[in-house]
Image 1 (cartoon, rainbow, N blue to C red):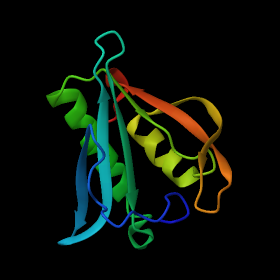
Image 2: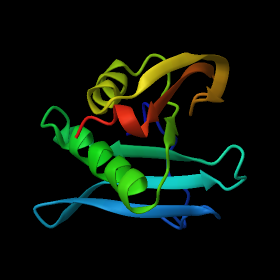
Image 3: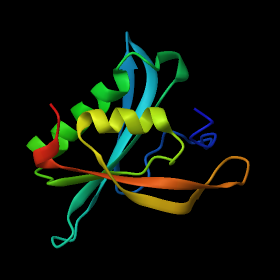
Image 4: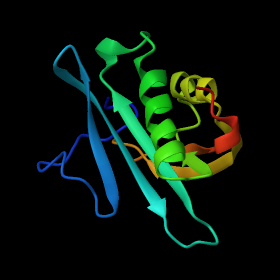
Length: 135
């Protein structure tokens, strides 16, 4: 987890204001975290999502299942037509996962986030239109 996310704060997983947070469970154990937020301005309304999974569960399709389930909820139940996500540009496994659900690359955001070692990393903006959701 630390490679792509900084160490969590002492009060984690207290959700950030304006986000909806979920624990990802596998066989009764917490193995990850997912969250979403919205841009409420009607002219620009969309949702943004983010997640991480414990390295021990990588490679099982769980990430794709979590992203697909969350995006389906946002589209079908909450009526969002567009969803964004912004992995680090070097996080090829996450990017591949998001592509499987229908996300497309929009562009690279240079020196977008600072990692735990204080190094600025590029981010990849990706978006998913409701009509492109792979169910």
